[in-house]
Image 1 (cartoon, one colour):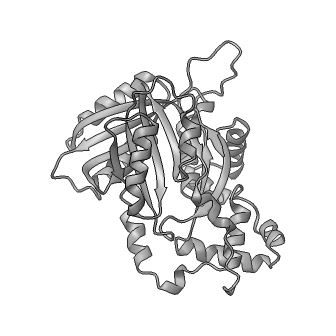
Image 2: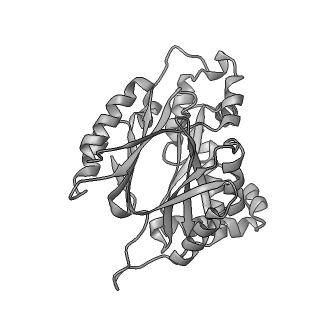
Length: 331
């Protein structure tokens, strides 16, 4: 399946009905749900300093506007011992019309973003480093990127450290766990009682199994959201940091300082001192000011922005994992 995701909308036609630009509270709310899409409204309200009714109203408005498409559940990449790889660069293709359908056939690529100057950004889930060469060759040829840059995402170390302390028995998923993930796949906020009815066990059992999966980093509860539904700008901001900075601390400090405009970031295990931020702004003027401020940061050597105007999401092998059933496992 291919899901089209226009990340940056072109100037609207008169007939276009655009959602008003999102505000900073909307973005904070979305980012909280990206990290855990099952957060209760009461907890969201406390974090945002709003009433529960106000939070519920914002979520419903974001859903109705098409900004939030769905709350999803997936198997954890840590549990699958998988890696996220980015392959990007300037393309020589004359047209990108057939490119999405070609990339989805690869089976591991889950995201294609198209930026200014024919800049393409692809992301893939790989089950092992042995798949890397095939992925890079495929993207290089299919996307027409003669000199692709390959970045292997550095997992967030606090999660890795906690995950590494788990016992082998903590990492086992039983048949019921797979059924719960499948039930939540396209509606991660589904009530426990509804999940219990679907899988044929008690609500208490579902709650216990789900809490175990969350605690042991075996499930990822997030959401698909579409900023193109509002008249905002999304930019990939590539920062090259100075050689003496602590890469475990500085990117987080920058993200915290510029939040919620700096939505999130990723670092690369094979590209020291390089970090890519996903930046949200309401206008080009705001984007330019933010860029200038980043360039003045004492830890930043250079800043390269890529404004995104189109993008696509693809289903991969990871989306099929919830169909797996281990009949010989106990609950």
